[in-house]
Image (tube, rainbow over all chains, first blue to last red):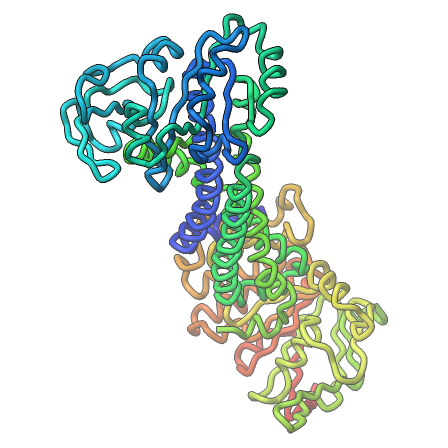
Length: 364
Length: 226
């Protein structure tokens, strides 16, 4: 019976119920989208790191696996590395930031291909002349470029020579010398990749390299992959907390406004219930149930909307962000917004529960 | 309950504070109502009859004096006990019907049972009461689809569904035309006669009061005639 009253109350003001539910849902979407982008983008980076085909990675002490870092390593290291036991191949890249999560990678194309087994071109092919640039399928889709199109990067116009399958290299590739020239990093590298004769020798090679290259970060493939976590980006954790806080705040504010208005509007009805012998707890329970139902509906809507945001990202910025659906966060996001909604209903519910019966019955 | 009395007030006084002024609404009211009696309290506006109604219903406390409801001293009850009183012993019929607009007739009646923790099937005899009230065919309608007379009859059904010892009716025909008024008053009298429902009705209308077994007149916060 009490749920019938609760549902009828929610149905009585459909627009207010809908708006409250939507705002609660948007909070859920904000959280799920942020977490989905974090996880998706890191997973995409893991996939691309694996796709390079290297066994041991080396980077400068100030570089981070997340982001580009600086081209701080001397190119001469490659010769030293190729002279080490069990190292079959060593090649380096220069990664230059283009701002807003975009980078261009300079690579020794011939060695790069030997390491990853060769880029799989969906159209076009490798560099054939000066001014050629290679892009992956996501970058091509995002920038709406096809083979032969002009692409302006680093204050220069390039011709798209080939579009390759994503997942085995960077998004944008240029010959390493070109990037070094344009970014004044001649003779420098951001990352070094090495291929071993046998992956069983990985630990031994790493131990040997660590003893000789004390100022460098040296990882096996597994170690590198394990670095791609949200913990490696402390700002992401802070940002996530801010978004969660905003979701709680706006959810609470919306529910407060909606339920406060509802309590004022239903003053007489609350008086009627009390005249029938309803306790303050009964009245409180009605408003809490209404809020919980809106929270659950909001969470469902928010989850559904996160699929929409993912679709939008795939359509508009597939090369910049990859959003995943992180199921583990569904209950967390739902719970967070439910807490916000319950915080918002506390005062209106208390006001309703403690309302004077006689005054309520006299309310017009 | 003493001497068959279900309501007894002794020296009941009520003073309201309006701004800086104290207004005496009741100035020592002694009323006795026997179980199964249909009593009307009449009087002009400001005579204190509504204040008496609110005190008897546990909706507002008296300033002084004693009220015994079904043998229980109302003045000594906590808010929680007064809530229980409204759930178990006293029920109301108001001038403005006071039905819940979002619920159907059936649910308006059912919510009163739910609040009183009565979850089983309704007493079969209540179906006859609904027929007598003429609302048995309107159970699935919302209040807005009913006439004033029908709404008041639903309010009466809701008030008696839990078989309270006392039914308090405050100007139950105040918003009704003469035909519907006579109908509602006739129903109250029939309920009193058929199931022995104790009814205390507040009205300023002498014609309505004529339906009661006994009439008390109030003026200026006092009972002036029994």
